[in-house]
Amino acid sequence: MTSQTKLQSKMQAAASAPRWGDAVLLIVAILGLWALASWFFGVTNLPDPIRTFRQIWIEISDPEFGDHLAETSKAFGTALCISLIGGTFIGVLLGSRRLAGDVFEPLLIALYSIPKISLYPIVLLMFGLGISAKIAFGAIHGIIPMVIFTMTAVRNIRPVYMRSIRTHRLTAWQGAAYILIPAAVPEIVAGLRIGFSLTLLGTLLGEMFASQRGIGHLLMRAIDRNESPTIMALAVMLFLFATSVSLGLLQWDRYLRRSA
Image (cartoon, rainbow, N blue to C red; front, side, top):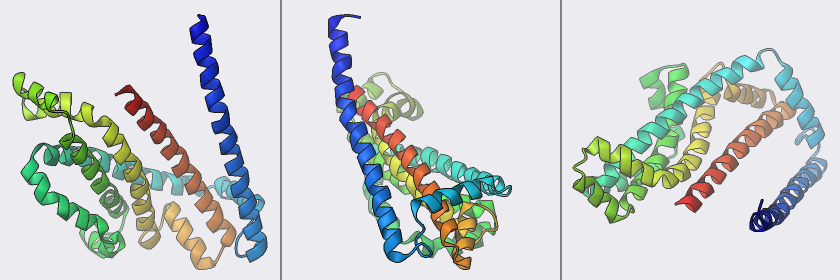
């Protein structure tokens, strides 16, 4: 290892140390504020961290929890794939055709601003009770951000890429697969970060209002029974899952932008 490589490694280690320190301080501060709020409002209304993590273990140890987790994972994973693939395809299509994008963009923004819960009765009528309705409701939440981010990325692609498509006489599919989508990957990942959270939200809402299985169903059942420890345990588990995946996507996004 050369001296320059050693210097770069030391600089990277020195830069990462404050980040880890800030993260630890943030976690300690959150737990401290959580415990203080629990003391102020009462443990029956807001369980403290110790009671909550104990309840998490109880929930995970429940033999039925695995089935509920598998149901939510199946619905969420399918909805996320639909949002990613469908949103990328539609975004590339609208981004590469200026007139179509100008026409549909205001419609997408208007649809995005509508509270999706108001559309759930229509989703139930179309798909019925079951996992199909949850998948559809999750995809409705996540596909629009993917379309908007991808469409914007394709519009902002450097003109030399578009000239390359024409010069090499690529078909629309070849141009999208080999040039447009790879060039738009950083923006697609940024849209995936938003679409991931909204798809998870939509799937859980679908389970809360019309389902007999899933994490959302467990959460709604705990709300009906006023079981504060269970509510907090499920909420913390969802928070930890969403935060960890979001951080991973954020690091991927930063890596892509540095490499671009």
